[in-house]
Length: 327
Image (cartoon, rainbow, N blue to C red; front, top):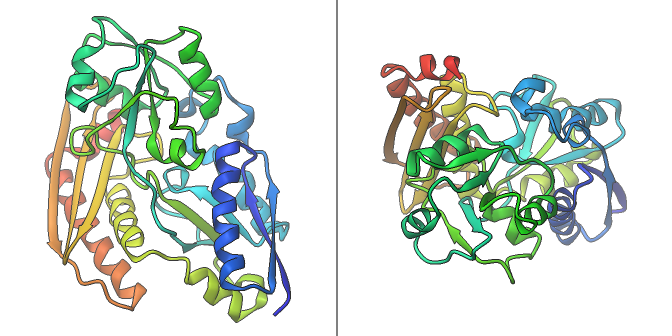
């Protein structure tokens, strides 16, 4: 078949690299389809200095892309999954969750710390300046080292690394997935943080392929089937459980919450760590349930969502919503 498909992406180097991953997968699945990537600048890209929590949260990174879907300018949008609200507006749907990249965070130091994560935290000097604008990363870091001076850091990956090199910070925290997708790990000295102690954001490392809820993508069943074929069952199950948990406790994209699913064998484990506004209180818990990976994606997502809801309810009973609302 011959068809022209348009993918919307933020204009950053990382976002375009992620969109190109999806582009390549679609063109491989359907050789007759040509895929064009259309860069769409979002409010989050333009407002690079203000706190995301104060100006509208990470939804600012998807609003214009969703508007482009609604207007017909693009057929699909590719996002970092962690930027997507846990509950989508009714007019949009999650069309695919491709293979997930490394979900962990990385601690990158100006002094070139390496080795085990626990040792890296110990090696930072007392009162070290740590750069991050993520409420979750800030409070998880202070949980490890209460003496750290946490200072805001926004911008693309290159900008953040440049500020570290310039001496603005002693260390910064970045997602491993972005470093790998940009192929810039070579030359960096970093420590991969243990995802059980330093729990990632829900959806971290995963991509979200978003489409309109009504109709068939591109008006062609073959394209719809090819997009569905991008789904990785493990990534879909883990992310679905994480997002269901976030929805259950009422968390937003900027809430200080880490949640990570881990599908191994025939079981799905979900671990969460959340804080109040100043980190003086936190809750952590996990839940593991049998999980059968079958060919029916609908059943798989329903089962994964149920696991997220169970953990969410358990933590709600322990005060999770009060902590989230305080933040």
